[in-house]
Length: 234
Image (cartoon, rainbow, N blue to C red; front, side, top):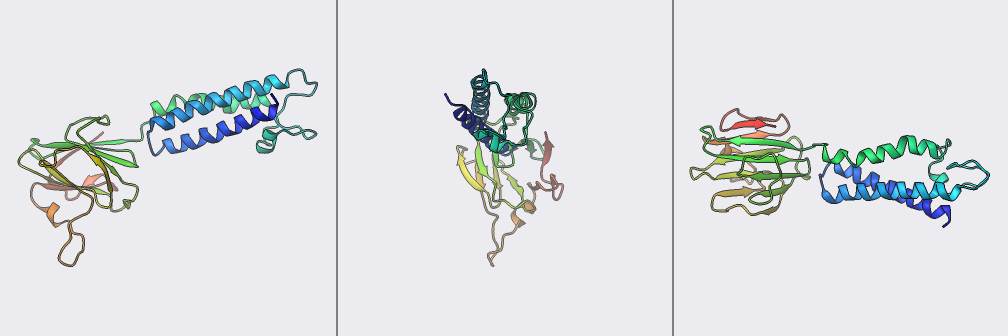
């Protein structure tokens, strides 16, 4: 095959790899991890066959030849030291990136307990989605949880508003979030994506400022006021 096809494979693999890696900072997705693996394989395959296609040429193997530049050369003109520079710099980085998503942890886990510790919930936040479950856990649950999309939540107004029920349940609000799914028992766990409003239609926290309720702000990562719950941040 012509070297230009391997060059296209290399370029496409780099683009897919970069896209998947950047998005992994915001979402720990299995699909994105798979794309990183696939892109790395495509890059190494294209690089290997590109180099093999150059064997037998009298000219020096390089990604940039002024006399006869190939397709990849126009994109990576700065790589004038040829294939060796790619193998030394980019290839190891791409190989390492296949390990990194499984060890990089961008999620925050917060345990909330009622003041008498008879009631609890866990909030797991990865910056894009927020998971809420009655269980105390540091792993994303498979069931008995609610998932919120928090991308539209303003940073300064980001919080969790909680009121504990006597029946081991709770009332919880994440203002301006979008509830994506929930399989929680609705008779015990009440979920809201908007704060209550007063008679003028203005959002108010009065309900959550009462006894046995708590307000946690993500901007300062603390209760305000420091009553109504016990918080443990992992």
